[in-house]
Structure formats: structure tokens, C-alpha cells
Length: 281
Image (cartoon, rainbow, N blue to C red; front, side, top):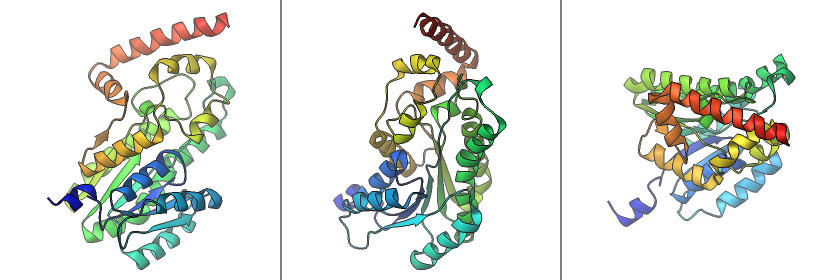
């Protein structure tokens, strides 16, 4: 392997990165470009897309690299499909689809309504499913491609306050498991990342409605920077890892997978302590 290929293992590769204008998505796009690849970042906010494009473009070091943007709601097939089809017509079928769309609305369950549940599932699940359904026929026709989805630490365990969020992240994990199995004969790889608490604009917004007990329970877990998650995500994709587990997610995965009752015992104990501390003010 040459020095150039070690430094730029993604040279010549293209990724469509949804949710790529902020947070983990933008950090993942930065890392992909830093390693020699080109990206098309997809998000709704045109201003944020433009700012992200300028920031990510500053990392380009190789001829032929590019950063493109698509402004679209990734839950809307009618809007997203023609725009991605045009991108493919202009640049060819990408090597990677990396989904980073998502948000959380934590609250006590008795303060949530059915629309809160629908919105979380619509954004977190369908917002990643629709881009997959758009690109999948292209991947299957070429018998190559890679689909990487973003679950959460809370796609490994349940936690009070996140009744709308946790099911959507379990759904992403289950979808990716199914895709891995069915698409293996087509030489299409899959990964799913489980980020812990990460210092993103979305995380800051969560704090507005987050129950006091959640804040207390989360204090000991630390807060990863999005760059660390983005680096781990791209590294895991390059290594073909199905489960990508940044930070404390690796420990939580082992406990929840091998000792589920222990995980519940730990969480129940943390909840009791947090309720007591919250009540004490």
C-alpha cells in the first residue's frame, strides 16, 4: 500500500450523507473528505448546508474531489428521489450512503401525545429509510454499495424520558440487521453506529425538555465531540464493521447483549438514585 492510499483510503469514492449539515453528519462528511472522498450532503436548512459545504470544501486536497449539497426533507420520497437521481446522473452511483438524520424529544411519558411518537418515528426511521429505498435499486443493479445508518446508545437499551426516541432507534438497528442479511448476496455492506451523548446542536435542544432524572443519570457518561463520532463512524465503515460503537457504547453493547438483566438492574438503580436526587432539589 502506498503512502497516498494510506492517507487517502477514500480517494475516488463518493458518499451521500443525509443530515450532513450539522452535528455527527457534518463531522462524518468532514472525515470522509479528509480521507480523500467526495460527498453530497443532504439536509433541509439551505443556510446550514451552504455553511457546511464551505467548511467541508476547505478540506479538499485532491484533484476531482467535490462537495455538493441537496436541500430536501429525507422523509419526502417525491422530493428526494428526483434530486438524488440527478446527482447520480451527474456523478455516478455513490460508493456509500451514510444516514445521520435524527432528533430526540425527551419528556415524561404522560406529557407526550401520539403526534410526538409519530414525528420521532417519521424523522428517525423514515428519514433514513427513504434515502435507502432511493439508492438501493442502483446499488443492487451494480451489485455493490454500502449503507451505514445511525442508531444511538439508546438503540441498545431503554431509558425513561425517551419513550418517543428509543423505539425509532431500535427500528433503525433492526432495519440495518435485515438489510445486512438480505443484501449480502449483492455485495452490499451495512453498518450501524450507536453514538452516546454527543455535543451537537440537537443535544442542546434536547436539554430544553429533558426530565431532571435523565440529566442526572447522564452526568457520569460524559459527552463526546461529534468529530470523535465521525472519525469512529468512517473508520468502522472502512473496516466493514457492522456494529460501530464509539465511546461508552462498546461497554453498553456488551452488557445489554450478554447480560440484559444486569443492564436493567443497573438502569433501575440509576433511576432510583436520580429520582431521589431530583426530589431533593
